[in-house]
Length: 89
Image (tube, rainbow, N blue to C red):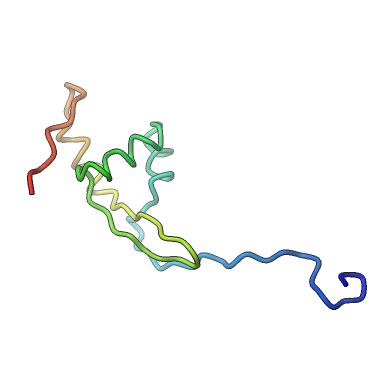
């Protein structure tokens, strides 16, 4: 069917067009900037220590994190290397 031109030979994926601010990054981008495991960033998200927003793009959702929030969290961490306990709800 491809040779006959009835079906495209290339598989197409929906593009993930997402409007985000200049200061918003994905967990993978944050991890790469800070040279740390991506799992650490996700851990901060799931424990509520790092605020972020979920954005839907194509068929999946992404976390978007503001760089200011990461810097604030790292500043709270200080030289001791430990993070403060998570905020109570």
